[in-house]
Length: 62
Image (cartoon, rainbow, N blue to C red):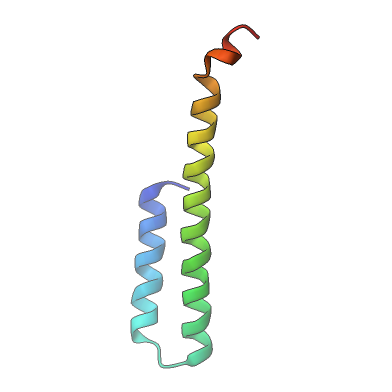
């Protein structure tokens, strides 16, 4: 998922969160936001790991 999509989804969830008075809905939205942020962080970490592996001189001879 692109950074723009992630930010848009988080923004829309926050908009719904701000308007909600339902405890269950608010809790679900916050949990969803946390999961999306964690996934985005892990994707970024994995992309960095892949880049590091590709550019590792140890791998150039393989």
